[in-house]
Image (cartoon, rainbow, N blue to C red; front, side, top):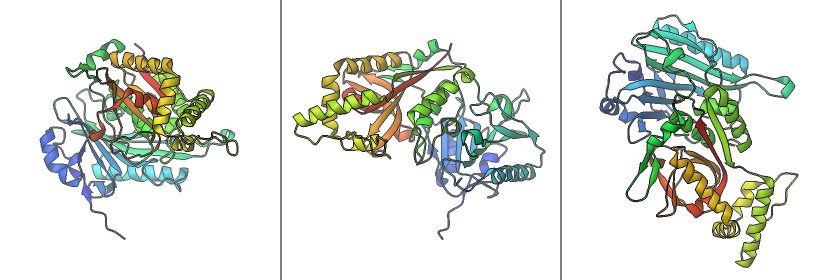
Length: 425
């Protein structure tokens, strides 16, 4: 058995954590895998084996540290268990509740402070439950969530997450379960979003200030993309909450239909509107396959079959058998109006400061090195350049994927869906 090096996060619980600078934070933590999620250094991430707090007493899968505009930590989230990164196969309700209780007891013993049961947070995306400790200068919230068993709908019990949230004790005396870290409806107005737009001399028009998220190795691209949009609107909803609502899986990702349904469920609570510009549709897909085969025949390339097997159409396989250049010619050449609408819709949203949730099929056309080589994926379009005929986009894989560009024709070719959210007011 390979020994995993201990990566101690103990300094996150020190009394001066809320006063240190980003430079001091960098100096202290760079040796244990500190990852900045943006060039602004407003979020730091630790991920992987060996992470722990309080001299190894609390094992951690992931830690996210948020920094204020003044450059000091103001919120820390420690993932103790989550369905995407943890082994949840054998965790039934009894074991999950025992796991929560053991951590509640352990944290209480470490802090030597009694906890207060917060109950369900009905302002969050999933109405998570939690326990609160206040030991100045820090307030702690142990928060957890699970999918209840519903026998009438054939839904089994499913554990979702356990996390420890930390924040400085507010001067008002509220706790992390109150104003410090709880999810809330957007306070951003639609009219204010355009102030995030930057227009560069080279023709780039790009939305600044879209937070980065690193989904890690799991198939959480859709829910990680949603998290970034929510945070851009000032709503602290994370990918693990969205994974519960959207029924995401670590290896299978999120179906577009369930993602759209999940976002619609949250419209009223979080005060956002969800809109579809383009969605997967059986007839449209089959028409695209027909157009592709006509162009493939003309170009002396192999045609593809979209015939179902056992009543199922395997979309990834069909796309995987296509030649990307042939598909590009067939899509644009046979649907010029659709291509024009695609470009106008996205540039119009970017001009309003609204990022576009962009469903794509990877592997059709060459891209710079990315963690996922093929298959369905979701990313954000955050800009455009009409001088170079490019869209500017970002993937939820960390700072090095914050801003990339692609010819608009290539973007249209690989598109499988386009969605956006906007504040209600």
